[in-house]
Amino acid sequence: MSAQSDEETPHVEGTVTRSTGSWYEVQVGDRVIPSRVRGKFRLTRQDVTNPVAVGDRVTLRINDEDETGFITDIHARTNKLSRRAAGHRPGEEHVMVANVDRVWIMQSVKRPRFNPAFIDRLLVAAAVNDLPAGLIINKMDLMGPGEQPGVMDLHLRYDDLGYPVLPTSAAGGAGLERVREALTNQTSVITGPSGTGKSSLLNAIEPGLDVETGEVSDSTRKGTHTTTHAELHALSFGGYVVDTPGIREFGLRDVHPKDLAHFFPDLAPYVNACKFPDCTHDHEPGCAIKDAVDRGHVHPARYESYLHILQSLQNAEERRRPE
Ligand SMILES: Nc1nc2c(ncn2[C@@H]2O[C@H](COP(=O)(O)OP(=O)(O)O)[C@@H](O)[C@H]2O)c(=O)[nH]1
Ligand SMILES: [Mg+2]
Ligand SMILES: [Zn+2]
Image 1 (tube, rainbow, N blue to C red):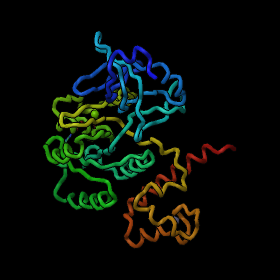
Image 2 (image 1 turned 30 degrees about the vertical axis):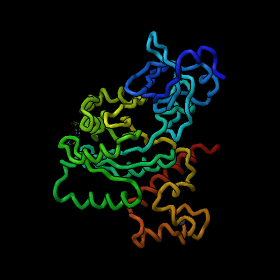
Image 3 (image 1 turned 180 degrees about the vertical axis):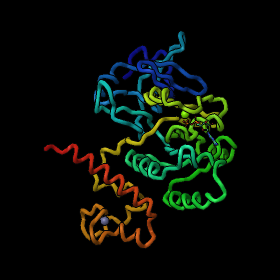
Protein backbone atom coordinates (compact mmCIF):
# COMPACT_ATOMS: atom_id res chain seq x y z
CA MET A 1 0.00 0.00 0.00
CA SER A 2 2.99 2.30 0.38
CA ALA A 3 3.67 4.96 -2.19
CA GLN A 4 6.29 4.33 -4.82
CA SER A 5 8.88 6.58 -3.19
CA ASP A 6 8.50 4.64 0.07
CA GLU A 7 9.87 1.54 -1.62
CA GLU A 8 13.06 3.15 -2.83
CA THR A 9 14.62 3.42 0.61
CA PRO A 10 14.26 0.88 3.44
CA HIS A 11 12.12 1.62 6.43
CA VAL A 12 13.71 1.45 9.88
CA GLU A 13 12.32 1.65 13.37
CA GLY A 14 13.32 4.12 16.04
CA THR A 15 12.34 5.96 19.20
CA VAL A 16 11.47 9.65 19.32
CA THR A 17 13.82 11.25 21.86
CA ARG A 18 13.11 14.94 21.32
CA SER A 19 10.52 17.16 19.77
CA THR A 20 10.96 20.75 18.77
CA GLY A 21 7.59 21.28 17.14
CA SER A 22 8.02 20.45 13.48
CA TRP A 23 11.19 18.34 13.80
CA TYR A 24 11.71 15.19 15.83
CA GLU A 25 14.93 13.51 16.87
CA VAL A 26 14.64 9.77 16.34
CA GLN A 27 17.14 7.35 17.84
CA VAL A 28 17.90 4.47 15.46
CA GLY A 29 20.56 2.25 17.03
CA ASP A 30 23.44 4.62 17.75
CA ARG A 31 22.27 7.27 15.32
CA VAL A 32 20.02 10.25 15.98
CA ILE A 33 18.04 11.15 12.86
CA PRO A 34 16.35 14.56 12.58
CA SER A 35 12.94 13.70 11.17
CA ARG A 36 9.71 15.20 9.97
CA VAL A 37 6.25 13.76 10.07
CA ARG A 38 3.71 13.05 7.38
CA GLY A 39 0.99 15.70 7.34
CA LYS A 40 -1.80 13.17 7.69
CA PHE A 41 -0.99 12.54 11.39
CA ARG A 42 -1.60 16.16 12.14
CA LEU A 43 -4.90 16.16 10.32
CA THR A 44 -6.39 12.97 11.75
CA ARG A 45 -5.65 13.62 15.42
CA GLN A 46 -7.20 17.00 16.09
CA ASP A 47 -7.90 16.25 19.76
CA VAL A 48 -4.19 16.00 20.49
CA THR A 49 -1.75 18.89 20.25
CA ASN A 50 1.14 16.59 19.35
CA PRO A 51 0.46 13.50 17.22
CA VAL A 52 4.03 12.29 17.71
CA ALA A 53 5.35 12.37 21.27
CA VAL A 54 8.68 11.75 22.92
CA GLY A 55 8.89 8.01 23.64
CA ASP A 56 6.90 7.02 20.57
CA ARG A 57 8.20 4.10 18.54
CA VAL A 58 8.03 5.02 14.89
CA THR A 59 8.80 3.70 11.46
CA LEU A 60 10.79 6.09 9.32
CA ARG A 61 12.36 6.37 5.93
CA ILE A 62 15.87 7.80 5.92
CA ASN A 63 16.99 10.10 3.15
CA ASP A 64 20.65 9.11 2.77
CA GLU A 65 21.56 12.34 1.02
CA ASP A 66 20.88 14.70 3.89
CA GLU A 67 20.59 12.14 6.71
CA THR A 68 17.09 13.21 7.63
CA GLY A 69 14.09 11.01 8.25
CA PHE A 70 10.46 10.94 7.37
CA ILE A 71 8.13 9.35 9.93
CA THR A 72 5.66 7.13 8.09
CA ASP A 73 4.09 5.24 10.99
CA ILE A 74 3.53 5.69 14.71
CA HIS A 75 3.26 2.41 16.60
CA ALA A 76 0.54 1.76 19.18
CA ARG A 77 1.42 3.12 22.63
CA THR A 78 1.48 0.95 25.74
CA ASN A 79 0.67 4.02 27.86
CA LYS A 80 1.36 7.73 28.02
CA LEU A 81 1.87 10.57 30.39
CA SER A 82 -0.25 13.47 29.27
CA ARG A 83 -1.60 16.71 30.58
CA ARG A 84 -4.21 19.17 29.47
CA ALA A 85 -2.67 21.67 27.12
CA ALA A 86 -2.59 25.26 28.27
CA GLY A 87 -2.28 28.37 26.14
CA HIS A 88 -3.91 28.72 22.77
CA ARG A 89 -5.47 25.24 22.70
CA PRO A 90 -6.76 24.84 26.26
CA GLY A 91 -8.24 21.48 27.29
CA GLU A 92 -6.58 19.52 24.53
CA GLU A 93 -4.41 16.61 25.43
CA HIS A 94 -0.68 17.08 25.29
CA VAL A 95 1.29 13.85 25.46
CA MET A 96 4.49 14.45 27.45
CA VAL A 97 6.00 10.94 27.18
CA ALA A 98 4.73 7.74 25.56
CA ASN A 99 5.59 4.12 26.43
CA VAL A 100 6.72 4.74 30.00
CA ASP A 101 7.86 1.67 31.96
CA ARG A 102 8.00 3.38 35.34
CA VAL A 103 7.64 6.81 36.92
CA TRP A 104 10.10 7.45 39.75
CA ILE A 105 8.95 10.01 42.26
CA MET A 106 11.92 11.74 43.79
CA GLN A 107 12.08 13.18 47.27
CA SER A 108 15.01 14.30 49.36
CA VAL A 109 15.52 13.47 53.03
CA LYS A 110 15.70 17.24 53.56
CA ARG A 111 16.39 20.47 51.63
CA PRO A 112 13.69 20.50 50.33
CA ARG A 113 11.88 18.78 53.19
CA PHE A 114 10.55 15.26 52.83
CA ASN A 115 6.87 15.40 51.85
CA PRO A 116 4.83 12.16 51.97
CA ALA A 117 1.62 13.94 50.92
CA PHE A 118 3.33 14.93 47.68
CA ILE A 119 4.37 11.29 47.12
CA ASP A 120 0.82 10.04 47.64
CA ARG A 121 -0.60 12.60 45.25
CA LEU A 122 1.83 11.60 42.51
CA LEU A 123 1.24 7.90 43.15
CA VAL A 124 -2.45 8.49 42.47
CA ALA A 125 -1.63 10.49 39.33
CA ALA A 126 0.60 7.63 38.15
CA ALA A 127 -2.14 5.06 38.85
CA VAL A 128 -4.72 7.15 36.99
CA ASN A 129 -2.38 7.18 33.99
CA ASP A 130 -1.77 3.40 34.24
CA LEU A 131 1.89 3.93 35.03
CA PRO A 132 3.89 1.74 37.40
CA ALA A 133 5.60 3.95 40.01
CA GLY A 134 8.49 3.87 42.45
CA LEU A 135 10.24 6.16 44.90
CA ILE A 136 13.76 7.53 44.97
CA ILE A 137 14.74 9.05 48.32
CA ASN A 138 17.83 11.17 47.66
CA LYS A 139 20.27 13.07 49.88
CA MET A 140 20.59 10.12 52.26
CA ASP A 141 23.94 11.68 53.27
CA LEU A 142 21.99 14.45 55.02
CA MET A 143 20.15 12.01 57.27
CA GLY A 144 21.09 12.12 60.94
CA PRO A 145 21.37 8.91 63.03
CA GLY A 146 18.06 9.57 64.81
CA GLU A 147 16.21 9.84 61.50
CA GLN A 148 16.87 6.25 60.45
CA PRO A 149 13.58 4.82 61.84
CA GLY A 150 11.59 7.24 59.68
CA VAL A 151 13.17 5.81 56.54
CA MET A 152 12.44 2.25 57.67
CA ASP A 153 8.82 3.24 58.16
CA LEU A 154 8.82 4.53 54.60
CA HIS A 155 9.96 1.17 53.28
CA LEU A 156 7.09 -0.53 55.03
CA ARG A 157 4.61 2.04 53.83
CA TYR A 158 5.49 1.90 50.15
CA ASP A 159 7.58 -1.16 49.35
CA ASP A 160 4.81 -3.34 50.79
CA LEU A 161 2.34 -1.67 48.43
CA GLY A 162 4.36 -2.70 45.41
CA TYR A 163 6.22 0.59 44.92
CA PRO A 164 9.98 -0.05 44.91
CA VAL A 165 11.92 2.37 47.16
CA LEU A 166 15.49 3.35 46.27
CA PRO A 167 17.48 5.33 48.85
CA THR A 168 20.30 7.28 47.18
CA SER A 169 22.93 9.91 47.57
CA ALA A 170 23.71 11.49 44.24
CA ALA A 171 26.45 13.47 45.99
CA GLY A 172 28.00 10.59 47.96
CA GLY A 173 27.39 7.78 45.48
CA ALA A 174 25.30 5.52 47.71
CA GLY A 175 22.57 3.46 46.07
CA LEU A 176 23.53 4.37 42.50
CA GLU A 177 24.11 0.80 41.37
CA ARG A 178 20.55 -0.13 42.32
CA VAL A 179 19.27 2.86 40.36
CA ARG A 180 21.23 1.77 37.28
CA GLU A 181 19.81 -1.73 37.60
CA ALA A 182 16.27 -0.39 37.93
CA LEU A 183 16.61 1.82 34.84
CA THR A 184 18.38 -0.67 32.55
CA ASN A 185 16.48 -1.24 29.28
CA GLN A 186 13.50 0.72 30.60
CA THR A 187 11.94 4.03 29.68
CA SER A 188 11.86 5.81 33.02
CA VAL A 189 10.49 9.16 34.05
CA ILE A 190 12.05 10.88 37.03
CA THR A 191 9.86 13.54 38.55
CA GLY A 192 9.63 15.45 41.80
CA PRO A 193 10.08 18.88 43.30
CA SER A 194 12.86 21.13 42.12
CA GLY A 195 16.03 20.81 44.21
CA THR A 196 15.59 17.18 45.25
CA GLY A 197 18.52 16.17 43.03
CA LYS A 198 16.92 14.71 39.89
CA SER A 199 19.52 16.16 37.53
CA SER A 200 22.38 15.37 39.93
CA LEU A 201 21.26 11.75 40.07
CA LEU A 202 21.15 11.46 36.27
CA ASN A 203 24.66 12.88 36.01
CA ALA A 204 25.86 10.50 38.72
CA ILE A 205 24.55 7.37 37.02
CA GLU A 206 25.58 8.54 33.52
CA PRO A 207 28.33 11.18 33.62
CA GLY A 208 28.14 11.82 29.88
CA LEU A 209 24.62 13.21 30.14
CA ASP A 210 25.77 16.53 31.52
CA VAL A 211 22.32 17.65 32.69
CA GLU A 212 22.27 21.11 34.20
CA THR A 213 22.03 21.13 38.00
CA GLY A 214 22.14 23.61 40.81
CA GLU A 215 20.17 25.89 43.03
CA VAL A 216 17.42 27.53 41.07
CA SER A 217 16.96 31.11 42.12
CA ASP A 218 13.43 32.48 42.38
CA SER A 219 14.01 34.85 39.50
CA THR A 220 14.95 32.10 37.06
CA ARG A 221 12.48 29.54 38.42
CA LYS A 222 9.57 31.02 36.46
CA GLY A 223 11.40 30.37 33.23
CA THR A 224 12.28 26.76 34.01
CA HIS A 225 8.69 25.91 34.88
CA THR A 226 7.57 26.70 31.35
CA THR A 227 9.77 23.85 30.05
CA THR A 228 7.09 21.39 29.00
CA HIS A 229 9.03 19.61 26.29
CA ALA A 230 10.34 16.43 27.83
CA GLU A 231 13.49 14.86 26.42
CA LEU A 232 14.51 11.20 26.45
CA HIS A 233 18.13 10.73 27.47
CA ALA A 234 19.63 7.53 26.08
CA LEU A 235 21.51 5.53 28.73
CA SER A 236 24.77 3.78 27.82
CA PHE A 237 23.63 0.65 29.73
CA GLY A 238 20.37 0.54 27.76
CA GLY A 239 17.12 2.40 28.12
CA TYR A 240 16.00 6.00 28.31
CA VAL A 241 15.33 8.41 31.13
CA VAL A 242 13.30 11.60 31.22
CA ASP A 243 13.90 14.33 33.78
CA THR A 244 10.68 16.28 34.01
CA PRO A 245 9.11 18.77 36.40
CA GLY A 246 6.07 17.78 38.45
CA ILE A 247 3.39 15.50 37.07
CA ARG A 248 1.33 16.42 40.11
CA GLU A 249 -1.92 17.27 38.40
CA PHE A 250 -1.71 14.80 35.53
CA GLY A 251 -5.08 13.11 35.21
CA LEU A 252 -6.00 13.76 38.82
CA ARG A 253 -8.72 16.23 38.07
CA ASP A 254 -10.49 13.66 35.90
CA VAL A 255 -10.96 11.33 38.87
CA HIS A 256 -14.43 11.21 40.36
CA PRO A 257 -14.23 11.54 44.17
CA LYS A 258 -16.07 8.24 44.66
CA ASP A 259 -13.42 6.40 42.60
CA LEU A 260 -10.41 7.82 44.41
CA ALA A 261 -9.90 4.92 46.84
CA HIS A 262 -9.43 2.54 43.89
CA PHE A 263 -6.14 4.29 43.12
CA PHE A 264 -4.77 3.55 46.61
CA PRO A 265 -3.67 -0.12 46.52
CA ASP A 266 -3.84 -0.25 50.34
CA LEU A 267 -7.41 1.12 50.51
CA ALA A 268 -8.93 -0.52 47.44
CA PRO A 269 -9.36 -4.01 49.02
CA TYR A 270 -11.79 -2.58 51.62
CA VAL A 271 -14.11 -0.41 49.50
CA ASN A 272 -16.73 -3.09 48.92
CA ALA A 273 -17.03 -3.87 52.64
CA CYS A 274 -18.35 -0.44 53.66
CA LYS A 275 -21.92 -0.22 54.96
CA PHE A 276 -22.93 2.34 52.32
CA PRO A 277 -22.16 1.58 48.68
CA ASP A 278 -21.48 5.27 48.00
CA CYS A 279 -19.22 5.63 51.06
CA THR A 280 -16.60 8.36 50.65
CA HIS A 281 -14.67 6.81 53.59
CA ASP A 282 -14.66 10.21 55.24
CA HIS A 283 -17.49 10.56 57.77
CA GLU A 284 -19.82 7.59 57.15
CA PRO A 285 -20.54 4.99 59.86
CA GLY A 286 -19.62 1.39 59.08
CA CYS A 287 -16.67 2.39 56.88
CA ALA A 288 -14.36 -0.57 56.29
CA ILE A 289 -11.44 1.69 55.40
CA LYS A 290 -11.67 3.68 58.64
CA ASP A 291 -11.93 0.38 60.46
CA ALA A 292 -8.76 -0.87 58.70
CA VAL A 293 -6.93 2.30 59.77
CA ASP A 294 -8.10 1.86 63.38
CA ARG A 295 -6.92 -1.74 63.40
CA GLY A 296 -3.50 -0.77 62.07
CA HIS A 297 -3.85 -2.39 58.63
CA VAL A 298 -3.56 0.93 56.79
CA HIS A 299 -0.93 3.56 57.57
CA PRO A 300 -2.63 6.65 59.07
CA ALA A 301 -0.53 8.96 56.88
CA ARG A 302 -1.87 7.23 53.76
CA TYR A 303 -5.44 7.66 54.96
CA GLU A 304 -4.71 11.31 55.70
CA SER A 305 -3.42 11.74 52.13
CA TYR A 306 -6.57 10.10 50.84
CA LEU A 307 -8.78 12.55 52.79
CA HIS A 308 -6.69 15.45 51.58
CA ILE A 309 -6.96 14.53 47.90
CA LEU A 310 -10.65 13.68 48.32
CA GLN A 311 -11.25 17.17 49.66
CA SER A 312 -9.46 18.79 46.72
CA LEU A 313 -11.45 16.70 44.22
CA GLN A 314 -14.73 17.58 45.94
CA ASN A 315 -13.81 21.27 45.93
CA ALA A 316 -12.98 21.12 42.24
CA GLU A 317 -16.26 19.39 41.51
CA GLU A 318 -18.20 22.08 43.34
CA ARG A 319 -16.50 24.79 41.35
CA ARG A 320 -17.51 23.04 38.11
CA ARG A 321 -21.17 22.59 39.11
CA PRO A 322 -23.43 25.21 37.54
CA GLU A 323 -25.34 27.46 39.98
N1 LIG B 1 23.77 16.69 50.13
C1 LIG B 1 23.33 16.34 48.93
N2 LIG B 1 23.06 17.30 48.02
C2 LIG B 1 22.60 16.92 46.80
C3 LIG B 1 22.42 15.55 46.47
N3 LIG B 1 21.94 15.49 45.21
C4 LIG B 1 21.83 16.77 44.77
N4 LIG B 1 22.24 17.64 45.73
C5 LIG B 1 22.27 19.12 45.62
O1 LIG B 1 20.91 19.59 45.55
C6 LIG B 1 20.82 20.72 44.68
C7 LIG B 1 19.77 20.52 43.62
O2 LIG B 1 20.19 19.47 42.74
P1 LIG B 1 19.57 19.28 41.27
O3 LIG B 1 20.16 18.03 40.74
O4 LIG B 1 19.78 20.51 40.45
O5 LIG B 1 18.02 19.09 41.63
P2 LIG B 1 16.75 19.01 40.64
O6 LIG B 1 16.14 20.37 40.66
O7 LIG B 1 15.84 18.01 41.26
O8 LIG B 1 17.23 18.60 39.30
C8 LIG B 1 22.22 20.94 44.13
O9 LIG B 1 22.85 21.95 44.88
C9 LIG B 1 22.91 19.62 44.34
O10 LIG B 1 24.28 19.74 44.48
C10 LIG B 1 22.73 14.56 47.46
O11 LIG B 1 22.61 13.34 47.28
N5 LIG B 1 23.17 15.02 48.67
MG1 LIG C 1 16.97 19.53 37.42
ZN1 LIG D 1 -15.95 3.60 53.52
